[in-house]
Length: 357
Image (cartoon, rainbow, N blue to C red; front, side, top):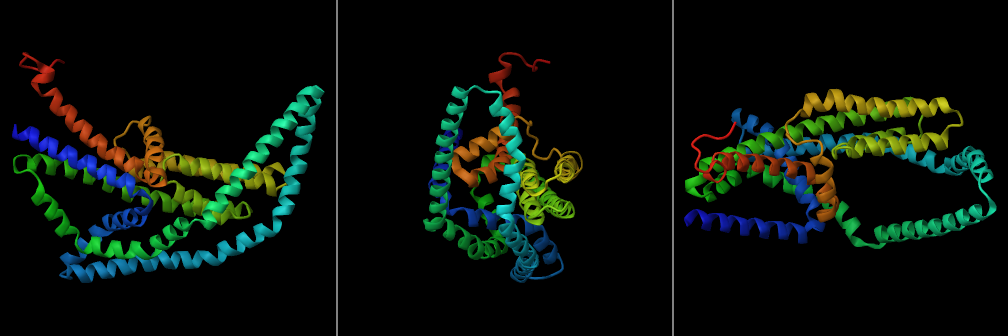
C-alpha cells in the first residue's frame, strides 16, 4: 500500500512538472541554457575546489572565464561575419540573375515537353503557391519584428543565462544533496543508481556533442571559406551549431551551402567542391567525431532519434527539439530499468522459478 502511494505521489508530481514546462515553454530557454552550462562546467568547479578554492570563488572564476572566452570568440567573429553579410547583400541581385540564367534552359526544356493546357495550369499553380509563400514569409517576418517575444528571448538569453549559470553552479552540490534528502528512504539506493546512470548518459552526450559542434563549426567555416563561398564562415558556424540536433546540421549545411553555391558560381566545379566539403563534414561527423566523442552513450536505436525530434518539436517547439535527444536518453534509462524489473518479477515469470531463455 505504501509503495502504491509513493508511486502515485511521484506520478502526480511528474505530471504537474510536465504541465508547468509545457505552459512556461516560451520563457524557459535562458534557464535551460544556464542549467546546461552549469552542468557542463560543474566538473571544473569541483576540480578547483580540490585545490582549496571556495565554491563561490571557483564558480565566479569558471563562469567569468567561460563567458569571456565565449564572448571573445563571438567578438572576433563578428567583424568577419559582418563583412561577409554586407558583401552578400550587395551581390544578391547578381546571384538572382545568375540563378535565373542557370534555370532558364531547364524551364524552357520542361515547358517545351508540355502542351499549352498543362503550361497554363502550371503557371496558375505556380502563381498561387508563390503568392501563398510570399504572404507566409511576410507574416512570419512581421511577427518576428513586431512580436516582443523574439527580442525578449534574445535579451533574456544574453542577460539571464550568465546569472542562472552562476547561481546553479554555486549551489549545485547543495541542490543535489537537497534532492537526495527528498528521496523515499526505502528506495533511495535504487533511485540513486538510476540517477547515476542518467548522469553518466547525459554527461557523455552533452560534453561530447559540444566538442562535435565546435570541431564541425571550424571545419565547415574554414572549408566553405577556402572554397570561395560567400557567407562561407556564417554558413559553417550555423551548420556546426545546428549539429547539436542530430540530422539537422548536415541537412541544413548541405541545403544552404549548395544553394548559395548554385546562385554564386557559374561553373559546376566550385559547386561540386562546396558539396564535397559538406559531404566530407558529414562523413567526419558520422564516422570519426560522433563515434569517438559521443559514441553509444545515449544508447538509443537510430529510429527513436527522429521520432524524439518530431515529438519534442510538436509538443514544446524549438525548446523541445533542443531537449528531445537528452530527454529521450533519460527515458531510455528508465525504460531499461523498468524492463529489467519486469523480467525479474512474478508478473513476467508467473509460477516459474527461472526466467525463460
